[in-house]
Length: 91
Image 1 (cartoon, rainbow, N blue to C red):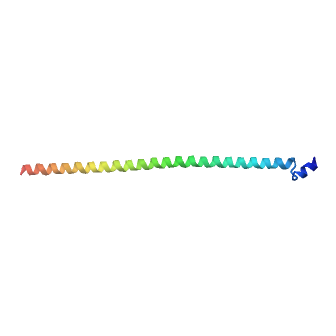
Image 2: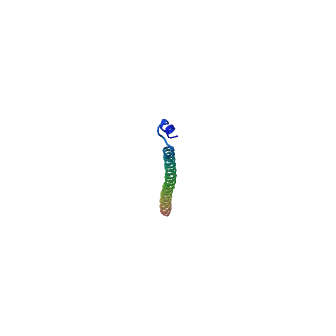
């Protein structure tokens, strides 16, 4: 039996088991790295979604503020025009 192992390249039972364990360990590491990569990708996607939502809210707030400002200016202008018109009618 020992003769046979030598002929096969000296690979005994332990050598084969070691190789198998090494390969299993490599596969586990690859799997863990894949899972980690996937988790990071999901986190990045989540963060991007949050950032997009924040940006959208910022734009909406800015738009609302601008509309309010324009509305006030328009009302102010209308009041001034109305007062001018009334003054002209008095004269």
